[in-house]
Image (cartoon, rainbow over all chains, first blue to last red; front, side):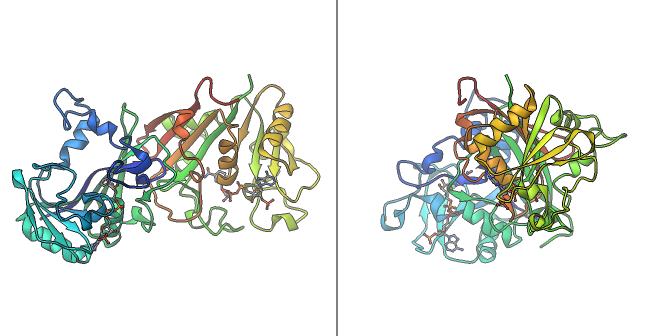
Amino acid sequence: MSLTRIHNMSISLDGFATGEPQSADAPFGHAGERLHEWMFATRFWGAGGTEGVDDAFAARHNIGCGAEIMGANKFGPPGWQDDSDWKGWWGPNPPFHTPTFVLTHHPRPPIEMAGGTTFHFLQASPAEALATAAEAAGGLDVRIGGGATVVRDFVAAGLVDHMHLVQVPIVLGRGVRVWDGLEALEDSYDIEAVSSPSGVTHLTFTRRVGDGA
Amino acid sequence: MSLTRIHNMSISLDGFATGEPQSADAPFGHAGERLHEWMFATRFWGAGGTEGVDDAFAARHNIGCGAEIMGANKFGPPGWQDDSDWKGWWGPNPPFHTPTFVLTHHPRPPIEMAGGTTFHFLQASPAEALATAAEAAGGLDVRIGGGATVVRDFVAAGLVDHMHLVQVPIVLGRGVRVWDGLEALEDSYDIEAVSSPSGVTHLTFTRRVGDGA
Ligand SMILES: NC(=O)c1ccc[n+]([C@@H]2O[C@H](COP(=O)([O-])OP(=O)(O)OC[C@H]3O[C@@H](n4cnc5c(N)ncnc54)[C@H](OP(=O)(O)O)[C@@H]3O)[C@@H](O)[C@H]2O)c1
Ligand SMILES: NC(=O)c1ccc[n+]([C@@H]2O[C@H](COP(=O)([O-])OP(=O)(O)OC[C@H]3O[C@@H](n4cnc5c(N)ncnc54)[C@H](OP(=O)(O)O)[C@@H]3O)[C@@H](O)[C@H]2O)c1
């Protein structure tokens, strides 16, 4: 059965997945790169990186995923919708290598990139978007790539089978919080916490058998 | 040197140290007892309890503390100020065994309990309250006992040397959040995270040498 998964979603101790304001110069606002330093240090990110618990979690990002769904604010800085040349942050060969669905109220024609990534722009409910992405994934899993708003919406809609959050030891104070609207998540998910020598804590949410879809 | 310490402050994944509404029947509101089950299972709490990492952290609560400061909402349910017989939740022999200062805008005369606890009622700034409690502690440390509002106020005022939070794998969604107003706490504290087989994660904040007081 095809699953819907979230991986490597990094949050501050107070639950923010991005700082503010988001801009072309600072995609994560005042958070800078601090939410992802744990990942940059792993072998998953680059040769010579660590191969401990952080790498074990990080590397699952690509395994078995046949499509990604992301939010408009992950795809580009505020205003990218007015720039017909914008093709995402990731250069000519983006790290998705699958059909990638960008949720936006300003859809445009698909963009085919090198390496297997095609960006599709979609205005649809979470359930509709997931059906479209699942079809494109051809039996593989669908990854929900963020940001926080999209993660929240898909979890609240009961569409997510597995969620991996990485709690980084900083207090951001402001930004977009992943927890809002998710009261009583523990009723639907088995939750594990694993702290890493790097200082982060990996939180995994595995949907309980019999719950939801 | 006498330190100011916080221990066993339990929070949900989304940072709430209590649910809502607080009442005589449900001191933690919709959180019930879920924030403290990890502690009830330890030997610190009762004979026959566990002696692993949760107990190691929990047991530091009493060590070396000569006074406690708590907020009005920890001392009693909403309205206790109108009940001249209210002596706290803890029965005739409260577990503090030291002078215990209750911050309230409705001060009353001190109440001497069995076992060394005397409740003093204080309307004062955090710094003033700490000076009073430190004097009463006679060279020992002062514990800030909660709730979230008082913890936040003392941390924000730069008065806390050590803070131990226990993150419980539930999402409360509402209540009083410990993180509000504490942006950039990582600039002043070394932070460690240690996950326990019980499912909770112990977060410790140790004030950096040279920072603050
Ligand atoms: N911490 C991490 O691991 C991580 C991971 C990924 C991203 N991020 C960061 O998170 C930030 C983005 O997160 P965010 O919460 O601000 O936004 P987001 O989730 O990326 O995108 C939200 C936006 O997507 C569009 N959208 C969402 N659902 C839609 C639907 N059903 N139909 C049509 N459009 C829809 C809307 O934009 P429009 O109305 O403008 O179309 C909405 O404002 C960025 O800073 C990004 O870099 C962090
Ligand atoms: N999770 C845990 O480990 C933990 C630990 C302890 C307590 N708790 C729970 O947390 C809840 C209480 O937390 P809370 O954040 O609602 O309130 P709180 O921090 O216990 O008390 C706040 C109240 O104390 C009084 N106060 C605070 N500072 C003062 C000052 N400088 N001068 C005079 N009065 C002052 C004010 O009450 P007045 O204006 O009414 O006087 C204020 O509303 C309770 O449910 C308690 O059981 C949880």
